[in-house]
Image 1 (cartoon, helix red, strand yellow):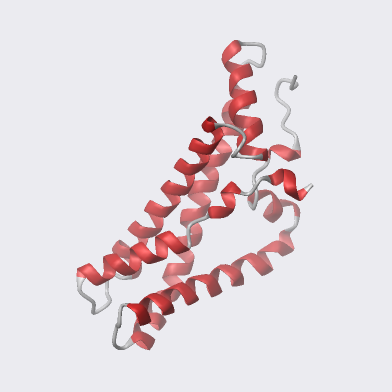
Image 2 (cartoon, rainbow, N blue to C red):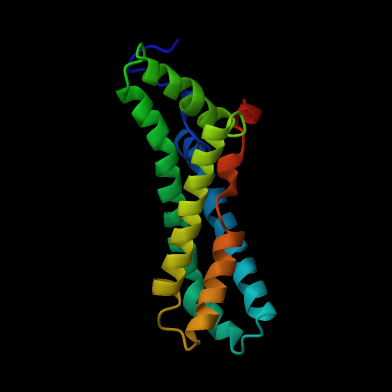
Length: 175
């Protein structure tokens, strides 16, 4: 049984908890995200046979990186709402106990534990995917000399291949 108003460290979701507990992690996360975004963008440009790919890359990669990271943070904040809601619910109430057992503990430790935590994690990833797509179409690619259909394809590829799938990583594996 949990104590009212107390949240243990095991309830904080990866990679947010790593960034908070180990600030030097930012030195690895930010360049790694940039490299992944760059590789996905360059491969998509090559696969879609986009001419002037160097110019497209130079004009968009930093925006893609920044807005992709913001989309991931939005999904992570959604994941954290499970914990915040848990602290608001009375732990003695049936709803509070159900929430803690089926969402808070499982979303933060192993999203594959039950259907509720898996669905919540999937919704959070889907929101990040949608935001990555939207940010790229509306902002990152807005001023590029590409047809709208090509911008949408590039944005979709980036959204699918740079989604925050680490949300599914069971944090139980890390401690």
